[in-house]
Image (cartoon, rainbow, N blue to C red):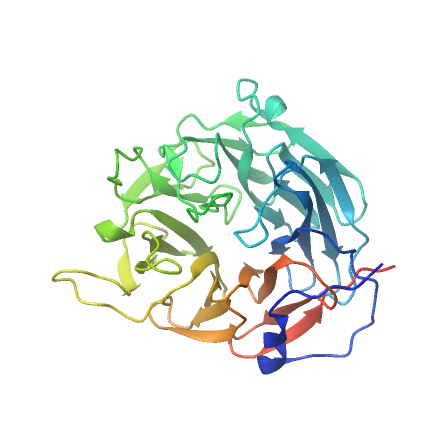
Length: 396
C-alpha cells in the first residue's frame, strides 16, 4: 500500500522533533481523509478515516488503532458502507477509546463498538436503540468505565436540532432513554456535518452537557446552559453560563476533574468565529467566571486574550492544567496554561488545514484532518510547547 501526506503538514518540521520509528505501510489513498482522533492513554489511541463520495452518500469508515504510542498501527477495521460521510475539512466524528481498549464511534447508522484486541466490531443501530427514531443519526458518544452516554438528533450538524440522550450502565448491553434530560438541543461547532461534542462523562455517575433549554426563536438565541448530573442521569441541575448574548450560537465543553470550561462562540465574521468567549467553573459547574473574550461590544471590556480567527474544531483540557484548541482554516493549535485566560499559538499549518485535538489527561494529540497523502504525521505534546511527530503508519 502507498504512503500519504496531508497538505500543509510541513509545519511539523518547524516545531517538532521527528523520532526514528519503524516504517510501515500506510493506508491507501482516498478521496476523503482523516475525520476522527481519540486517545485514552499515552499509548492507546485510534484514528478514523472516511473514504468515498459524500455527494453519492456512500462512504466507508476505517479505524486504525495503536497500543504503543503511535509507533505501530493496526490494519484497518473497515465499517459497513453508508456508515457516514463527513467532509474531512470540518470537525471530526465523535469517537472515544477507553483505557481498557474499547472504542466507540457515533455515525449516521448508530454506534459502532469494538476492541483493539480484535478486528471485529458491532453496530448498535439507531432503530435498535431508539425504536421510534427511524434513521436518526447518533451524534456523539462519551464513555466512563461501564457507563456510556450517546446523543441523537435528526440533524447533528444543526445546533437547534432537538436532542435525545441514551445511557447504558452495563457497557452497552442495555440502554435507557434519559427522560429527565433538561436540554432541548446540544451545542456543537455549528458547521455543516459537525457532530455536537458537548456531553462529557468524567466518571460513571457524573455527566455534563452544554446546550439550550429552549430552541431558537427566529434569529434570537436563548442563553447557553450547562446541565450536570451526579447520579447517572436520575436528576439534573442547570446553570446558565455567563456568556455574552453574541456568544450563544455554538460551543464546546471540556472537563478535567472539578474544572469545567466552556467555549462560547458567535457567528462567522470573515474567516472563522469571532467573537469567542471562554468561561470556567472550579466547582463542577455551579459557579462560573469569564476567562477571556475577544469581541465584546458596547460597555463590556475585552478580557484576557482568546484566540482570534479560525473555526474551533476541538477543545481539550489535561490534568497538567493545559487547554488546547484546534483551529481550522488558519490551521493552528492554540494553548492556554492559565485555564483559558491567555492563549498562544503553539504551531500552525497552511490556511486550508483543519486540526483535530484529543487529550488523554496527561498529553494532547493532534491530527491535521483533510485529504490524505504519503507520510501522514500526528503530533503529541505533554506541555503544550514542544511537540513530537508521530508518523501514522499501519503494520503491513
